[in-house]
Amino acid sequence: MKKIIIFGSIAVALILVLIWFGKKNQTSIIDYQTEKPFKTTIVKKSIATGKVTPLEEIEIKPQITGIIDKIMLLEGAKVKKGDLIATVRVVPNEQSLISARGRVNNINLSLKNAEISYNRNKNLFDKGVISRAEFEKIELTFNQAKQDLQNAQNDYQIIKKGSSGSGSSANTNILAQMSGTILEIPVKEGDQVIQSNNFNAGTTIASIADMSKMIFEGKVDESEVGKLVKGTKIEISLGAIENKKFPAVLNFIAPKGTEEAGAVQFKIKADVLLDDEYFIRAGYSANAEIVLEKKDSVLSIKESLLQFDRKTEKPFVEVKNAEGKFDKKDIKLGTSDGVNVEILEGVTADDEVKIWNKTSKEEEKDNKN
Image: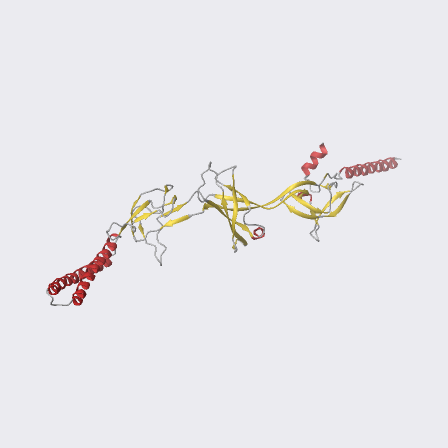
């Protein structure tokens, strides 16, 4: 009798355990929620990083080698074409100076000899002893000697002072070659500078730019450059100015790319339309927001609803049927902005698409509700 009671109790316990497991499995079934496709505007954008620079910028270099004698202006000053920026003091080469002085002395001796010959033959010409043709040759030699002396003296003054001493100071005075703002003066008084010539770029004394005309210079990836079109309106955001976007117009797309970190990048440029309220400095870091594609009121779903076949890698969604189950439907995708994606084929606006990847926290919250 006792054995019957014991075995009976065990059987009842097993039945209760099986019932409990059955209920547990039933409650673990996930009740998936759904979302319907909707119509929205999808804008595909590209972000190009770069900086803003002046459209016109030049470097001022000296025409002679020497030492900066005086700097008249400071960085940031506004100048007009022809304004004096600095002066250069010439430090002559001793060998060249001695050679030029010797040439002056030699021509001076020749001139004195030509003058004596001229005076002597002029008396003879006045008396009718020599012909006019002979006298004119002697007069020509005398005049040439005077001109040679003047040239030699000018050369000597240029080597010594940087100018001929006739009031011209174009070589020693560093003048602004355009109107604008002085961006940089990389030298200081006492620095030695080298003239610009065929073999040397020369020392930059100042750089000047027109700050009223700024451009954006940036780079885009090769996967997006084919979608860019000259004349496209873009928006420029500056790192130094928050919550402000400046309109710009794309005017240049490089025909050749450069490889950077394994990716090919293409340079782009755009004219920036400035706002008088803000002062834009050269070299500000900037981002250009370029609209590559825009579609208005197209049937879309969230990208998070997409699933991809492991073998074919084609996209699909699961759509709820009349029995409450979900059917797999292949779809054809269009434009995407990273959040929403356009649906070209596969589902309609009335279909209920399964939210398959809902997080566990969201599920627990729904179960409590």
